[in-house]
Length: 377
Image (tube, rainbow, N blue to C red; front, side):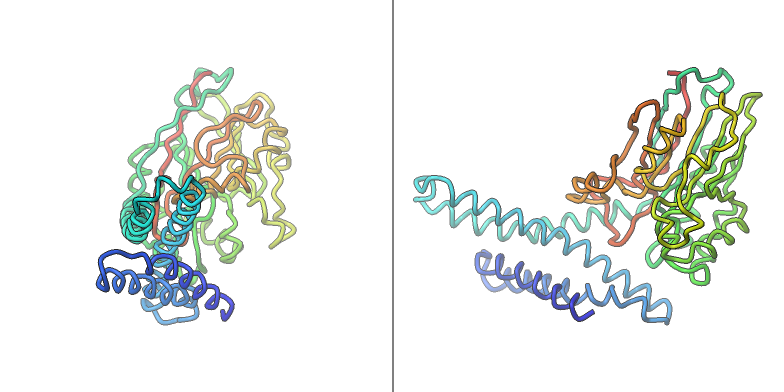
């Protein structure tokens, strides 16, 4: 905790030293900017330590304040870095353009612009995150798709992250939206929770209302393992969801078969060796001539899924980056960031997530409830 606080103070000191000396508007503008920076510096450790507070709703309120500040700090820090890059670039240009004092003006304008944009991005991102995820409709072309499966529908919910800031009201709204779509199948692709069954069971209760022709299915994400995966597997089964742990079911739809398989999270073996993710094992013994769909929390399961002969993989995990500029960095860990992609004979759809993780902020990566329809290629 001490190291975190020290780093927190150093990063906020950097922001203050870069912005305040050039801030236009006199003491009033500098004072407001300093207050914003100080509030951010103070709230970040509060959010980090909120889980140590057992009293509710105080713990969740502290977490919310700290996470909101984290979203604001992210924009403030990144914009300060961008400003410094622009200023360095200005210095490297020939001296003549700055002889009239325009470089000093650039320093003043950008110093004022950084906190203004950071606050704007944080507020817009907050409203984007807190509104109910919108329905995103996607057609997936499948080669040699049987006529009876034309228009087969799957609604995907992913990365809901029920926890300190996402509660029962939001889950209720998501379940209502999912049921209104009347899908053939519901897929919940992991990272459903951020907390224990004891703390969050009341908030996941609406999931028992999920209704689809062939039922609702769940696969674990990395956050289930942080939160006690075995407890959550038992709880979700109690709520009526079928949990697929490196296994499959064969669905009969209008006389044709769909193989629906699910794997544990890509990194589950670090928590339980028996839960090592295995797409090949998940489809062992399945009919070879059926359409094969895999639920896998992380997109990087796709390489094994393609070798195992799946036609479609549904994943989440990335949040599409959640907010700028982090969407540009997701590809450093995952092969796909968001949307529909092709890998050999496999289609991979990556949801941007139905909730959010950490800061209540979405910017450039809207949340989604995904309505997927199988169509002939």
